[in-house]
Amino acid sequence: MKQTITGRRDLAAMLVPLGRALMDAERPVLQAHDLTMWAYVVLDGLHVLHGTDEQPTRSQAALADAIGGDKTRLIPVLDDLQQRGLIRRERDPADRRVHLLSLTTSGRALHDTVQQQIQRNEARLLGRLPAREQQRFLDAVRVLADRPERDLDTSAS
Amino acid sequence: MKQTITGRRDLAAMLVPLGRALMDAERPVLQAHDLTMWAYVVLDGLHVLHGTDEQPTRSQAALADAIGGDKTRLIPVLDDLQQRGLIRRERDPADRRVHLLSLTTSGRALHDTVQQQIQRNEARLLGRLPAREQQRFLDAVRVLADRPERDLDTSAS
DNA sequence: TATTGTTATACTCTATAACTATA
DNA sequence: TATAGTTATAGAGTATAACAATA
Image (cartoon, rainbow over all chains, first blue to last red; front, side):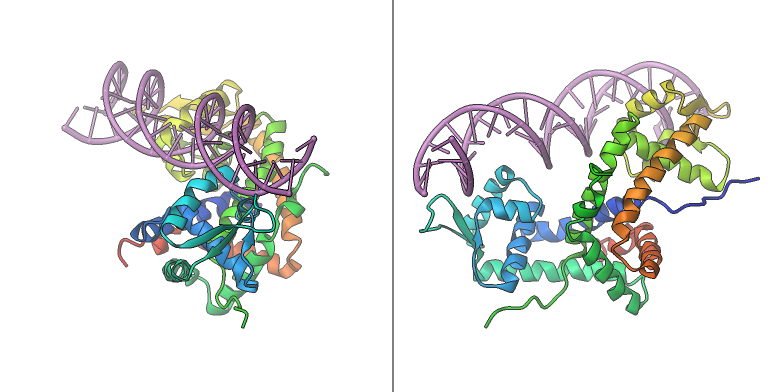
């Protein structure tokens, strides 16, 4: 008798390749605007962090942590973005060790343009789901993607 | 006036870190069974490919393609798994160039054990969603993860 | 001549450690 | 002494190219 797959597939085994495909789809879009993946992640990170309030992001380390990157890897990225006038990076007068980071007007504009194209591609993929399922799916992803380590940490089990 | 986030976040920006967190959660489980990530991906790949029929997988290249890996990177992994008696790797009599791959009994047993632990962790994360949303979410992921390139390919847009 | 599997090599990305300047 | 930022170095992971065996 042939064996049937009884259980579900691993969530990781489905999500990781899906994420990789999404990144592959982003690459040509970013390249068209001379942005590396990390450069866009920085722009988007600042966009998200600025979305709720107007205060600049305190410290590069905080940004690195927020976007899941490494503070040392970030530096050449920030150098490039600053030189191109896409971000502001100025010393905090209150603590001259830290750099305050924020998007410039053109930085925000570039981000929005790129994001529109990216999300247009993503929308095509999401089109596989019935319209009302799409929003439900996005909501679920938002819930699961919010600090997943909190529920995945195995050190306590 | 404060700016509010109008649109949604990028799907990639949520799924990629989520996938990374899922992999991080797998690592200690795999390590406890002396498996690398790619070793488990191979075991799982063979499990999935064997799930529907009993025929061994034809060629390592086909497996590499199925699991999204590189055929050259796979070889030391297959060497190890074969040496530990977890997979069978025999030349096809019909075409002595290709290797037929299949799980041994102990290979399948190890896979199932590891997968149970992995999915138990994943279930804890999925527990954030109401019970009936969980299945819906998994169904959506399955739909989206199936050859996503088909809808994400930007070369035609 | 083309294809499978293999090996060797080069490259990219990532992580670690050491240094400076401010506190 | 501790922290933010920076730089340099080492390591892991990945991709590319060349080779032997078989078709």
